[in-house]
Amino acid sequence: MFVNALQKHNPALIDAALCLHAEGKVLPDSYIIDLDTFVDNAKKIKAEADKHGITLYAMTKQFGRNPFLARLLVEDLGYQGIVCVDYKEARLFSRHGIKIANVGHLVQPPQAMLAQLMRDVQPDVVTVVTMEKAIALSQAAINANRVQKVLLKFYDAEDVFYTNQETGFPLAELPSVIAQMKELPGIRIAGITHFPCLLADKAQVMSTANAHTAAIAAQQCRDLGIEVEQLNLPSMTCCSSMPTLSQLGATHGEPGHALTGTTPLHQFEQPQPETIAMLYLSEVSHHHQGKSYCFGGGYYRRGHMENALIWPQVGSPAVQCKVHNDNQASIDYHLRLSGTAPVGSAVVMAFRTQVFVTRSDIVIVAGIHSGQPRVIGVWDSLGNEVAHG
Image (cartoon, rainbow, N blue to C red; front, side):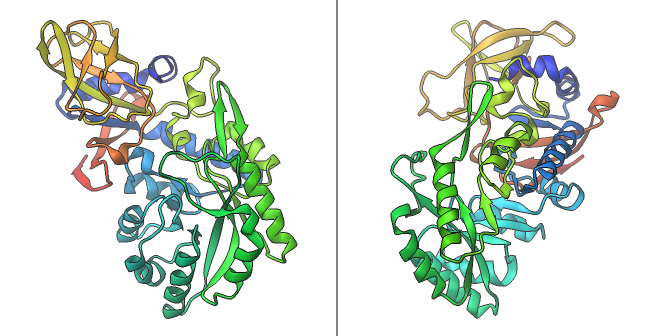
């Protein structure tokens, strides 16, 4: 999906990956992140958000819930915390002492974790999508002697949900929901959220019906006397989407893919402010009936993986080939490549990722653009450190 963009906009990342692979410092099934470009992307997104008065919560699941990068975003680059899309991510970052901004969107925290969430994690907001969760959260907050701010999610008939992500209150029930929420002493309504609110239409950012539902819900809350501190409209938060977010009245965004320059916008010839900062490294494992197979583990079925670059020998020109996965239900022990290349040949891919659902490692590399790449560290796909640089 991003191979051509990678070659055009960040060839130094490819060169660094090949060098580290040849030296045996990086194993196959590794995502390599160009730290300097990642930081530059984060700064550009933050500057554009500041220009439009939008607060940023960082989303890290796409690059493996990495605590090194999360801490960098919050403590050095001015992001206001991490959005944890599930409770296990919240558990991880809490253990590292990294500020957690939003919990419960997309996955609600389980009942047994609410006490710890209120006592130890104390997020800025918790997204709530059922009255049962609101009641339980209220009691946990009372027990922790605090009032927890919550975001509510409402949906309407034309809204879009990804499969098995269907949640929220019907928009028609908003007055009743608000009235019930006001009766719960341990929580306070801080705003509205939804997902997905922005999508890419080729090289353009388009708002979805969900974004308009969220804006309507926010206005109805104001009409009922609620101070809407947050209108949080995640998905496709990047430099190019800030004007659209501003027009929709958003106060908060949650960049994820933009930090690594891998939103759908980044696959086109038209350059984006962010630069691709991540690639997937593998190597040829074996041959079978005249076909090459490389190590897998990082495949994501919505990643639009199409092409790979292979180097038949160190120093040789790259050969672009097709990546084949004939059965998406299969475990990606290996991926088949068109043509043949010697066993051990380096393979580079670039596609849309959700590293936290893979078996891959994350390798963070600094100094790429000064010609002195060095491995900062290696983490697994769930943010656990594997090795120091």
